[in-house]
Each structure stands twice: as structure tokens, then as C-alpha cells.
Length: 101
Image (cartoon, rainbow, N blue to C red):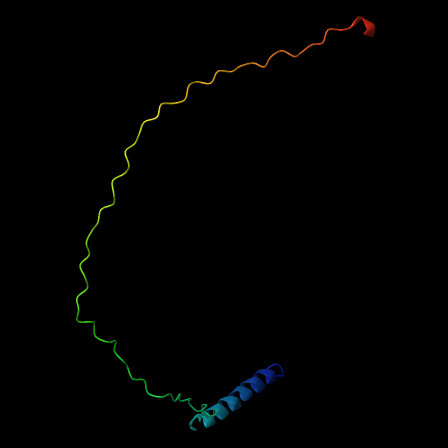
């Protein structure tokens, strides 16, 4: 019997809590939040649309196509003659004088 007391106390506590919750169930829940901020209304002067002016009554002049001038006549030029390599002259040598020997 001593081992059953804790279980009985838990069961009694659960019953008390359940009856307390059931007693508050009948009351309607009232949501108490702060009031919303005031709405901002933008006040600007009224806008009046102004349409563009009507087109001018005079018609535009017709476009006359003018072709470009013909290219100048090409005159064929012959290529230059081939380049012929010319070697430089041999170095100028001074004959040794007999005094420097």
C-alpha cells in the first residue's frame, strides 16, 4: 500500500488541474492587444493631365533619295622592281710600314 501513495497523489493532482482548466473554458478569450497605429494619409494637390499639342497641319516634305557618287577609277600601278642586295665594299686596309715591325 505504501508504493501506491505516489501514484495516487499524481492522479489527484492531474484531476485538480483538469477541473481548473475546464472551469476556465466557459469564459470567452479576450484578445487585449494595443490599438493599431493611426493610418497615414498623404495629401497632395490634384494632378491634371495635360495632353500634348496636336500635330502641325502642314505635311512633312517627302524624302528624296540621293545615291552616293561613283568611286574614282582605279589606276593599276605595277609593282616596284625586285630588290637586289649589294654587299658592302671590303674594308680598306693600310699596308704595314716597315717602321712598325
